[in-house]
Length: 372
Image (cartoon, rainbow, N blue to C red):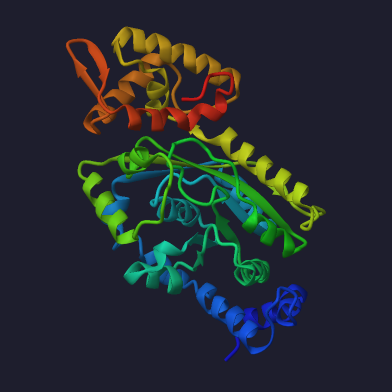
């Protein structure tokens, strides 16, 4: 049985052209490849069950306090038409926290574009049949897959909102990364008359898998998700954090040429700049950026004050107002996380890699400072 979206995808001009041999493959083999990718992408969202997921996920979610900012922006955009939420990507918990902030505020749930590595085992069944997540093969150059993905996203947007991560995957270095344009290109091809992009930023006091990400710094290969879950469980002991999900002014996409690489790239960079501008600057990031290998608490407060002045001048979305406040709020969690050590009135660095991971999260607001 061919569903409505599959039928629409197969009838699109670019797919019909592929089936006729535009990329060197045609006939039955070409159709089987397209239909195979469509089966992989197909997803179903069951909203009532989706909301009930809060309860079995409570052991994780109770460790993270969700705080939404400028939620009225998202509400207004959802009332006006179709919405594409584009967010930075910090943690595997993003997939839980950000959609639930929408749900907490009565905003209809979007379909989520997630890496295909998340679709194995029971979690994969939940993603595919409950949350409505789409498995994305990142970094592939397979023409059949790319054409199918773009066509599927375009048709899906006629019925659902979309939540995706322009960076592609999580930031292993801590900084906000440059965008990839594949899904943005697909979204533009939908040519829905009332679609806006709502830039969305997520920030944590502490990222659950901070030690794992900071140790690698650069993603070298795709590891089994079961291994990543085991590592997250290890670092979840004693873990507590706030998660700020901040929504920026919607960006209209009507009139942008989806076939212009420059236009798509410019839009993608504009979205990432908007995400960076509303990214919540939290005490842990301030202290991490102000920290030196060894310092007194008073010196750390003074450097944090100077840093906050720079951030204030840059128009940053500050979650702390003074150096003393930043140090008071950040030292205990950073020490309990094994990142800093406080002894006899001095603060010392215990894990430089993880400290730099947090410091880099606000580097985009401090462009005049040298990169770490």
